[in-house]
Image 1 (cartoon, one colour):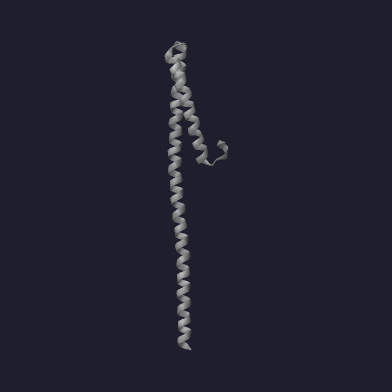
Image 2 (cartoon, one colour):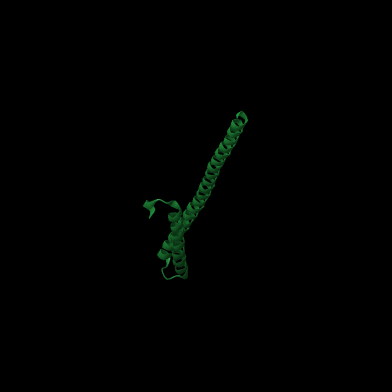
Length: 110
């Protein structure tokens, strides 16, 4: 009877140890996945915010060029080119803002 009880305790302890190991490993794997996902999202946000800042800066510069060329000669081909460039820069800025909104998650930006 002693041998059977010892064997039963050994089997139970082995099963308990295996179950605890599985639970802890699953928890660690989930934390690692969450950390990786958070890091990837952080990198995507930094890249998107930087691209938005660059697009807005280019748009601002094109607006400044357009304004000066319009003051000099509103019918010049340089002004027409600057106007077209400012429209394109505005479209680029709007597209970058849409990407920021998608990644940000802050409802105040919508």
